[in-house]
Structure formats: structure tokens, C-alpha cells
Image (tube, rainbow, N blue to C red):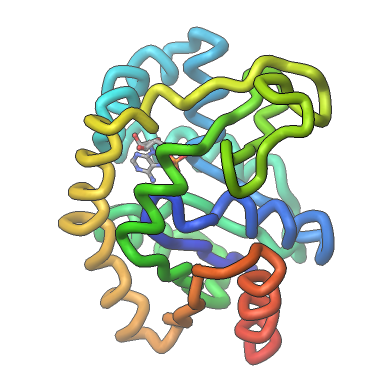
Length: 211
Ligand code: AMP
């Protein structure tokens, strides 16, 4: 079964997805993480995606389908798969509907705009192990080095203010309408995404419990 974890950039999909993986044993596919790995490796997919990602634009659907196909191939039937960052437009939602996976719910982490901007501006990511911190809300105990592995903490290239503005606009115009697609199918579940990560996690679990 697939659970779609959705929300604007900065809504906490990565953090909450990781908690669901650790605590409930779910598997997670983040298309953003998968693309960043491809960029780091200098693969063909990575080369075609990098420029779009840096500007905050969506990577073309055919590239995403290749990425998703590769990622889905790593998991077996019977596992609960969290999809973080896919689908991000209607065409992707339709492609997903044609795959042979049961979709359990579309979980929308809802966060107000000011909070999103604050989270994105302060986000820092370890370039080695990809752990995520926030300069004020959840700083690393080792300052500009990662708590977990000692790697250098960096700001994502697309967390700069110009890319963030584009990403939020893309979200409003292109990704937000995907909600209606799932509302019509009765799969939409809203989860208030502001609060401590434990509070948000509890709300998510409550929604999952109703499935
Ligand atoms: P994320 O880590 O989910 O914020 O994704 C980072 C970037 O990867 C996005 O701004 C897009 O450029 C690209 N990306 C990730 N998922 C998708 C998708 N489903 N469709 C198109 N582009 C994507």
C-alpha cells in the first residue's frame, strides 16, 4: 500500500516520513532525495534534473517516472510505502493511479506560509548523511557540523530566498490542485503541521489509524 505524504516545501514531509520509517517500519521514497543523489552521482538523470532543481522548478515528468520506477523496484509487495514529494502535478497523480499499487491515503501536512518560510530559511542539511537541522528550532549540538556523523552542514541550494519563492509559487499553482484529485476519491486527510514534531506525528498516526 502507498501512503502519499504531501505538503508545501518546508511542511515537514521529510521529518515526519523519517519518524514513520523508524517507528512503524514503513519504507519511504522521497523523489527529492532520489534526485539529489542522482545529481551528486553526476548521472544522466541528475544532469537533466539539476538546473530545474536549483531554480525551484519541477523536473519534467518523464525524468520523474524513471526515478520513481527505479525506486519502486527496490520494494516488495506487502510493504507500506510512503511517497514524499510525488505526485506534484495532475499528470503524475494520473500516472500513479495507473500503477498496480493500492493508494491508502493522501496525507496533507498543512502549514501556514510564514512558518514555511521560516523553516526553509533556517534549514541546514548534512552533506554526508542528509540529516536535517534548523538553526534555531533544532540546531546541531556541534554547531555547523552534523550531530550524527560530523559532516558539514549546508543550506540546500534551493532553500535560498529566490528559489523558495519559485517553489512556493509552483506549489500553489501546480501541486496544490492535486489535492482535489484525491478529495474526489475520498483519500484526502488534512493534518495540522504546525507544532512540535511529536505533536504533528501523533496527529498523523491518528489519521493513519482511521484507514
Ligand atoms: P523536495 O526535496 O521534495 O523539496 O524536492 C526538491 C526538488 O526536486 C523540487 O523542487 C523539484 O525540482 C524536484 N522534484 C522532487 N520531486 C518532484 C516531482 N514529483 N516532480 C517534479 N520535480 C520534483
